[in-house]
Image (tube, rainbow, N blue to C red):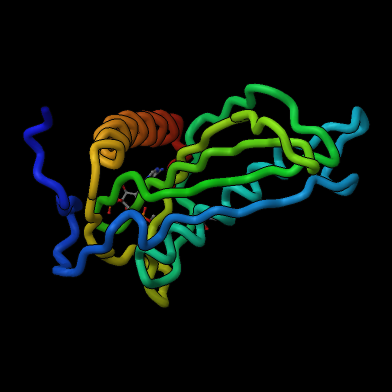
Length: 182
Ligand SMILES: CC(C)(COP(=O)(O)OP(=O)(O)OC[C@H]1O[C@@H](n2cnc3c(N)ncnc32)[C@H](O)[C@@H]1OP(=O)(O)O)[C@@H](O)C(=O)NCCC(=O)NCCS
């Protein structure tokens, strides 16, 4: 049995305020039309990425209580094509909060417009940063985890964040060594 007592408040922000995961969870449904398609009749990956960015924005901004910007997208693998005429459903949740940033996990599913089995086409992890009026990073409320699933997602997201920031730092050093860093 778990020794963790829920609810559990996590995050690095100096703010007292904390919000539960459910406060910002989002679901969005979209019909894929010919405007979204390539010449083969399936949907452009970029259409899905735009929808992911939008739902991540709503989710992160709802948690932060102020505007957020997209800092990074983790690698996205599409498991199967999405066809024109299918309905795409996106579900978004805050997995992790730092001081000014949140990781939003977005699960994408597709199904026939008339219903049936929905298939999982891809998941994305998006880092969004809360900003003030000058566009500078701004502290956000902590996150309240209420169950084991949210805690597991939080721990996984913490590992991803370490790897992501390490990679970003390595890239910065490489650019710097080539004289490309401003
Ligand atoms: C995102 C942005 C606000 C970060 O500003 P910054 O001055 O580099 O901020 P900091 O180094 O103080 O980092 C702020 C937070 O962003 C996170 N962050 C910065 N770069 C990141 C990256 N490449 N990947 C993931 N997180 C990142 C940091 O970990 C930190 O999180 P924390 O406060 O929770 O620990 C800034 O780079 C920016 O405005 N980028 C453009 C965003 C945008 O316009 N997006 C849409 C593109 S069309």
